[in-house]
Length: 152
Image (tube, rainbow, N blue to C red; front, side, top):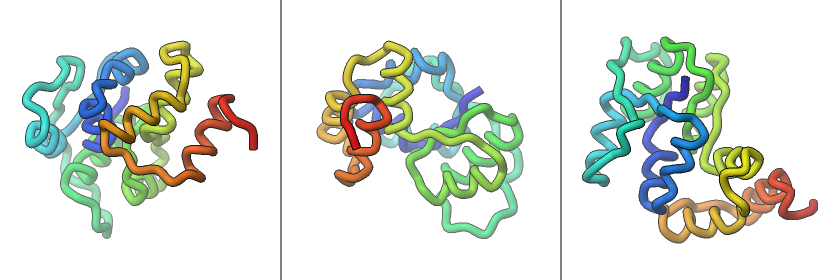
């Protein structure tokens, strides 16, 4: 079971690469606040993005937004196999609760390893240009090394 906040889904939707999520995970579960955030920018959502009601939010002192907080609460309550987010603070909290995390870079590397895409470099160029993803050169280089497209 995979639970997501808004970041990965909206980035891939803007870049027309949302099919990668479906190929990798079949279904993505989101809480109501994430659905609301997504609908603010996207008229339609894929049918495999499924909303679930959220349990009470985790009692944590954090500056997370409502979408991240609900997604984390949902992931913890469902004992999700994976939490999707590019928000570093949300990922740090998820790690404290024992959740495995992945962001867009990890998704691209997994998609290449699973034979869904041929080039992480080309996909990253698309999601940066169309999806609004901002990555440092160092982060991109580490992803390309992990994908076998560059050397250290």
